[in-house]
Length: 217
Length: 158
Image 1 (cartoon, each protein chain N blue to C red):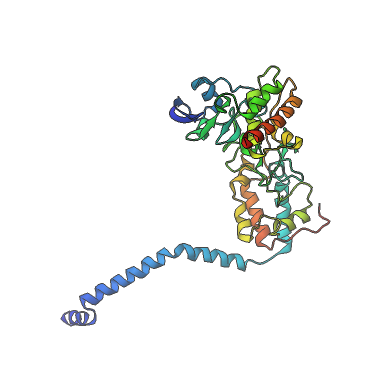
Image 2: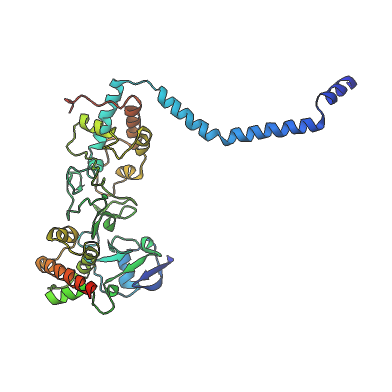
């Protein structure tokens, strides 16, 4: 025992041991601080490595398409400059106009009636703090688009609000997108749950964001 | 119930009210300003339009929690002596018939003229389409807005 004690004393002095401990602690803290960015990097790598599959991608998009063409999404992506309303997607009563920024004009701005939350009651104005249409310089029309046309539009930065792949994936969680699943009394929900929509949306994009054939309806 | 601070027509009010209460209720019943009218209660007619930070909101569906700490202007506060160009034009053209919707009409028209001082007929239609008049005074409303535009221009020059 006395031999071991002597060896230990000579191998690590108390001062060296203390310095080593501090260094190990420092490295541990630094690793912990960068853990989040490491994880973000891993997600990117995972995304990059995902295999493209046109069949899976198109199949997922056809599910996405049913949601985007439902009144809860399409009503605010009209072909004209007046939003649509109701489950039959009729022109919005009062004829409010898109305006340059998509937020209406003069005394007819969206948020004059659409409050930050749904107004109680049947067919009363649904709410969101950021209620608006796409802006006049990029109308992002859904109404009347075929699956082929809409898929091509959604991945075209010059037509999709300048969104890259990451921003497109995130857009499925945008509060105004989510509002489609909380539409207020008297309005039907999109044809699938938000969870299933996100799954289809993500699959479509990660498998290559392929557009269905032009002949697909 | 909660203590809600509202600034209406540059006057501070501390109201004991539910934050979910419609602003229209607070304006009429708690602040005692009766010029703003109840029409439909669901943002369909425009009779209840007031300005919230300068925008023509429908006070029947605007909760007082949204207006707390913001600037609210009602028809009573639009001008000092009913001398806003829109008010003067409304009198000159003798626009109202029954008059019930006209505080809302005037508040909407005031926003239009601020943002578009010389509006076309199309601008007027776009701005005023959400304000319904059961008496059908629409042509006089349009005429009065054009006159108000002229009055505003003259006042700015003078």
